[in-house]
Length: 458
Image (cartoon, rainbow, N blue to C red; front, side, top):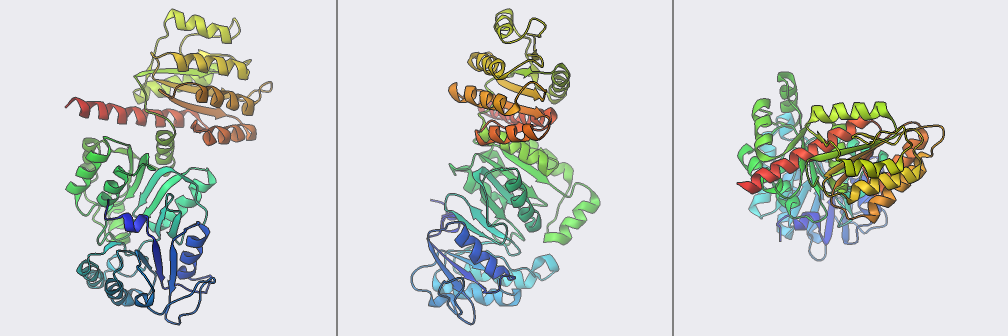
């Protein structure tokens, strides 16, 4: 049992600084916890003892009947040390300190007092200066971000609160499911290594995505990365790559960004996959949580357009993905699903006359062949084909075959293609609006798989 279980799966939560005012963070915290469907005990705490959203309120955490596993603190910074002391006296097990105004603005002594009080009573503390924590398995949205979050298998750990809230909205927009969203803030106590250690054994989390500006303990971070990347992928967005960016990071959360070359080497050494923007990072994590890793190095491209097939081939070659020369027996099989002027070599060009039965048959043939490790399925919108029907045929055949290879798709076109892509994602067949993004995600998956294989041989 992890010492962070009481934070992620609390049986009871106190919101200290709860408010009846919808413009206050204390109101948003209570509202989001209720809206998320949390089923444990929820106790608002405010000086007036006024009820909040129909819940009985208390003037002090010490007056709450029964045990309190987690306290979410949203009061002015100057009051936080005393509140943490009261939580310790109550026997609270874990803390999330939303309040800002500490090390990030030079108020280091006040932050030290908060940490000292937490450690005095053996409480683990997230923050200060965070927007909260969301965890899908416990249906707990203890954040002042969005009330609606799509549950899934990506754990998103972010040092930036504003970016974290924005990314919650972004994942909603594109229906990307997350198992957890964790705001790290100033990392007075809990740091990224603690999160990696927790998610390493979390069955609901298949991949971890981290945004970091700097590490408190670089050696510990590397050690945790090495342990978890043997089991599941970790995608890292590290800001502060430039001198001015590093300076901005230091003024943001008080982090020392350090040499970017050192971080780059550390990520490669530990098997972490470094992305360079949020679209890329979520593209990678989406594939890694929806599909199994490639079973071998041989990649097959199936397309209805020669041009997009050539572009995808170029992208694969440049990304280190092997375009497998198809043997005669497999080429003969693919010819059954294309007109005589089609191309049965790799890329397999079904031509613009490819309907859903052509995709169903060709993808099904590829799925059955153990010599193929990954499949990129491309569709360019035409006037005579229905992208939604083709998407359904691809999802149907993927679900009907043993899931032992990576399938990634790209649908290029208008609104109907957007609908088709949404339906594919809903059925765990990851899809992207341009082939290069699909190739980028697959290449990252291959890099992680190769790292694992190298480690296994040691």
